Length: 199
Image 1: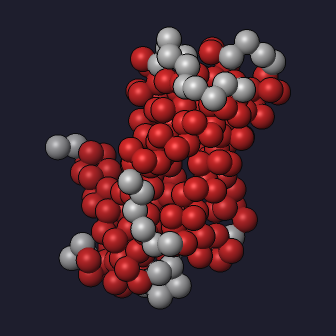
Image 2: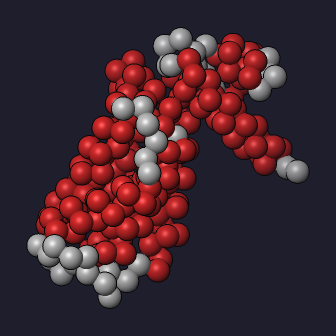
């Protein structure tokens, strides 16, 4: 194993442990010592990988959002129409929410405490995902770029609103129910049709 691979593996180990600690303790209460202890690492060694708790949290969020973008890229390869795109989007967002619900909740707490430079890094990852989604929908909708961006923002807003409701209720999503309800709402908003188009 190369030194670079070992370094990446160690960072991933820290990310997985840190996510659990943040979810259990909250952003403010979590310390670098607790994260180091959770991976049986000296705190000084942890600071070799991350300069601060803020940097660690930001890198964790970037990694999770980057992974979600890669999942979208792979899943959309086989999408044939708008309905397929919406269903893939819903499936991946719901699965991401259920897997990282604690981290998503903590990110809302942490946002105000992060310096502008770190908040901007997370926003860049979110914009990267939105640009990718716009490029996918552009292939299936015969309209101008501005309209596509509006549609993607509409879908994203509807999904995020539902996810935030589940977050406030502190419950996981029942993915099949979520997908059925949201597909009817979203596709009617996009196409004006009450039935879900196929093919």
